[in-house]
Amino acid sequence: MEKLFSYGTLQMESVQKETFGHVLNGVKDSLIGYTLGEIKISDPAVIQVSGTDIHSILNYTGKDTDIVEGTVFELTPLELKQADEYEVEEYVRIAGSYSSGNKAWAYVCAKSQINNI
Image 1 (cartoon, rainbow, N blue to C red):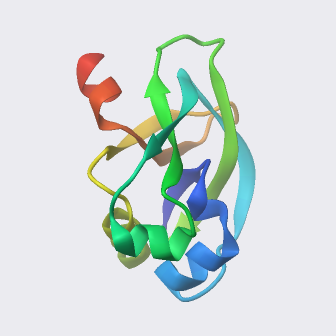
Image 2 (cartoon, rainbow, N blue to C red):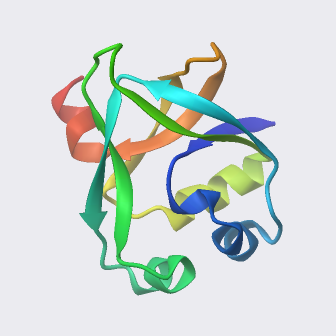
C-alpha cells in the first residue's frame, strides 16, 4: 500500500468517490516544512469533480515551525496513479516529513519545490 497526505480536495468524499470509486480510510497527520496557499486551476474535469476552481496548494519553506494539517490515506498503487491523474500540472508529488514520523507522498507546488531543491 502507498500512503498519500491530503490537505485539500482529495479529503472530500465526493472527490474520492469520483476519483477512486469509494471513500478512503485515513488518519490525521501534519506535514512539516510547508505553508498552505491557494491557486486557481483551469482544468474543467478537476473543477467539475471538486466543485471549485480555487484549490489549496503547499508551498515549501523548509522551516520546522511551518506545519500543515491534513489526512494520510492508504492507497493501492493503482489509486496513487489515479490521484496523479486528478492533480493538475501546478502540483508535483514528493515524499514528505510528518509529525507522526510516518512516510507519505504529498502533492505540493511544483514551482516552490523546484526553487528550493
